[in-house]
Image (cartoon, rainbow, N blue to C red):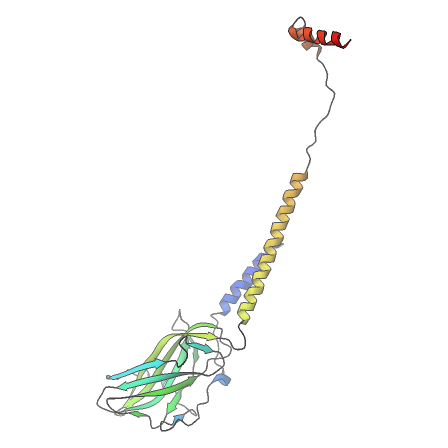
Length: 255
């Protein structure tokens, strides 16, 4: 019975690890509404076109950089808004017309496996003249159903130079997705309860082994008890020896 219970608990532990790599569908409620005014740049969040299907190449003389403001650990809370800043530097001879910023979440050990396409953020009147640089904010939110853990975030910025489309990858690295509303996640609570159950099962097994061992030690071996008899043939062999003489002398003294 204990072996069967141990097998069931091991199967549950394996299933929890499988849930870690299960595909999480995008949550439309977690998408960021970026319809707020962005000054002269003009951030547009409604009816944003998906520019990722173009697979454009980066332009020469354009450099990009990414910064997570006040978030050096790159922690992203599931279901909540997160912000990063994209810096672009124009070392070319023509102006850059920034169109949009977009990103996606992938598995860290299988980068081809897409977890979630994050919302695209478009810009109006966002131009970077030659020998200049500019910074653009990007607000995004991962699905609230996404398991906590490490994931790969791939962010690209789409722009035009002389009416030719280009795109550059400003970030291709790891982020840490965390759960909101407490230090204990559902997975950690489940693993804790599973560990307690395994420890209890181990304690019952050790206790049963100790009880079986104590029962074996308490068993008393049966010993045959009888009366000692004197063999007459031995008396004949011992007659006339010092042994018989000592016995006779002792009997005389007792008398």
